[in-house]
Image 1 (cartoon, rainbow, N blue to C red):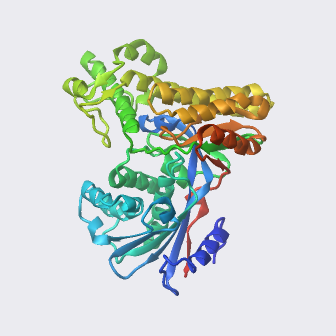
Image 2 (spheres, rainbow, N blue to C red; image 1 turned 180 degrees about the horizontal axis):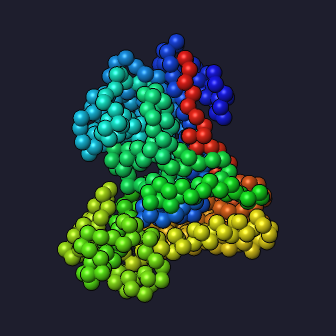
Length: 470
């Protein structure tokens, strides 16, 4: 057995599977084991779908997937502990039902039984490999057994962790020569087209390419990795899950995303009408976040409606330019506020990173205070501009900032897709000890059960895939 960073974790997992009744792996046959972590969204969040720059840290919590090929045409998918969370623990999917069909039909089949819908994140790997023409077919099915300690619905990308652990194991089994970035794109396609959640790419990239205790800095155009920047010594990022479930497939997330694309479309229509660009040209390369801030304030911001019905938008501007969402004629959208948030957040990201660098050089807490204020501004934007806040997240952040720098916490924000889930917190060496105390105070105030999330680990690419006989 080759030694690599996760060798001991994988070996322990395989020993565990011998005593799990749901696992029916055959002895003497090969297995492929991969591990992919959740991620903590330090800054950026939803600007991933407008081409902005984000800073993400892979977490210690992760999904481990073990795959064993089968001779028949069945995918047997096992979620260890899934029954405890209301999921159907074992789901069987006929492999041929994933092949030669369009994505919406496959997605509809996999979503038919709510308790079994989690299987789409796993079975989708086979669907997209075939659908994107990366394989001619599959010799047989597989059994995939997954274990996760990534909280679901907490905004830390439990779904991306499932997708990436599955895809890394499957790519190894099929001996596919795919880069970690290519696998991340496939994971996003699973989520967009098989699960039906309009996420950006940052979750899959971080779960794939992140490094322990480092911020993966991504310019989401669509996958430019700018840095894997190690956190300065003494700086900590942690989180507390509010206990309020969020969903990237939810109404508020989709409405905020559509509003941002509306803003982009309105700006382009204005430029094309002026004749300053051609009828098919986009001087911003397809990304709202590329609009220069000064130009936006002077020329484009006055064009954007504060509120606009979907019906009115379609009647005047037609398509909003997003392939994974649709404009609902009956909904009201806020293009102005959405554009404000995306451009402000994108401008704050390099300042946030520079603040961390300045703190490492000087140890002046003023730099951490400023970095924390950038996070707090992002939190306010989620709530006020995008409609992606949650009262519980506001309370948790208020409790943290009442402790403040004197106790080792400098800022925080609601993360990922918002509308609940985690609040990420920036602190110094005192933060790990403070997190449980904050969680206890929050629980006493709300009656909810928060979860403390702290620690980091490598992404799937650095963790490697174990191939051995079971």
